[in-house]
Length: 515
Image 1 (cartoon, rainbow, N blue to C red):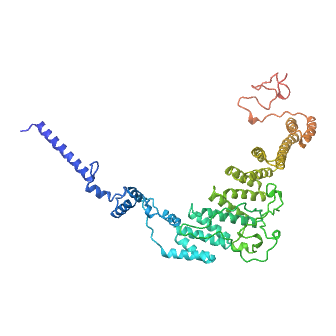
Image 2: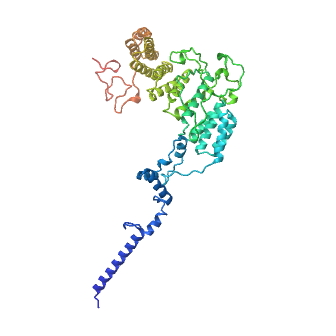
Image 3: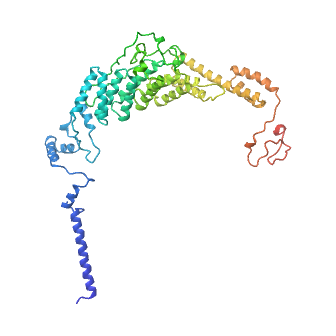
């Protein structure tokens, strides 16, 4: 007969064996840390979406073929989607394949996209119509494709063709809206360089039509207008079709936007002291622009200049580091300068100088920025911050370009003299204000400042005359404002009082210390 303690030991031993058996069975079923893969673990792996899939028999056979062709590394290349046997030298196919990659757990595998012969045939037919100059018919087909296949490479190319058809028909308003729709629907589109090129050309056309002086482009950017990706041909950089118009009128009698100030080509405000002429490389020459341009879409119906500014802003924002970003910024600044909005033009000149310090037009922009800041100064009654910035720019220009011609240096020094004269006038006007309000000491201070700091200016002579009159004026005590009195200080309105407010024997006239 077992004792109580023996029975307890036997029970503990059986319970330990049972626990170990349960743990062993669980490990065997799960395959975890068992050193082998059980049937249960293999079955669960095939249904687990969080781990990689196994290699199928078809993939294994293809991998063996890659090994036979390229050796052991060929298997690795195949499994990574880099099988050299399936590589292509066609840039269009490479671009199309790159769009088919997925970011799921099978990202090493190219997804098979179902062919769409109907869309392909429709696209090719519209493309042929475009190449044959049938822009209106091609535009309708491309518009349907862009809507039906939106979000696909076909839709992207079709939307670009819609804009190109409108541009070739000289419907610049529709073309500009279509280009903007392309950028909105496909951010980072592969047609971005061509979009900004077209929008820049449209903005120059509208600025010239609004009466602004638009110079010829110094150098055309060699931007290929081929869409690519699906075919090697596409819309080339064609000259737009010019709508029928009446006999050409002289350039000086053509219709201009009434809301824009007419600036003559020999006006010095049109540039940095150089003559600027209307560009002759516009998409549609001004002498061939029809009277119904606002009705045909060649020009906006209202505010032509404002729409041109918006197009230039789109060029800057869509491609801020592109080859046309500096041209668009400088053209914006010049246009505002010609419209006599000197403050806004100064802002754009400053942006150009800060964003494009290596631009070949940097020196020209510096000189124009100086003119804009000087012209934005309204008068001595207003802020003089623009004069201070203009002085800094002149000093920087003289330091950065010491080898400039002597005539240009004389102009810059003349501007410095002009700024100095404006500062002398401001000081004289302050002194005159104090004289008119009966504050002789304040008037003497500012008149003396003009005489001492600007002795050769015309304002110094006027200040000397005023000093004689101020000397005859009675001196009045001007107490400080009671609001400015510190807590515990004496009453500022009392005379000859100390810190406690009591009269003091050391104070002289007007509250000043005596001898």
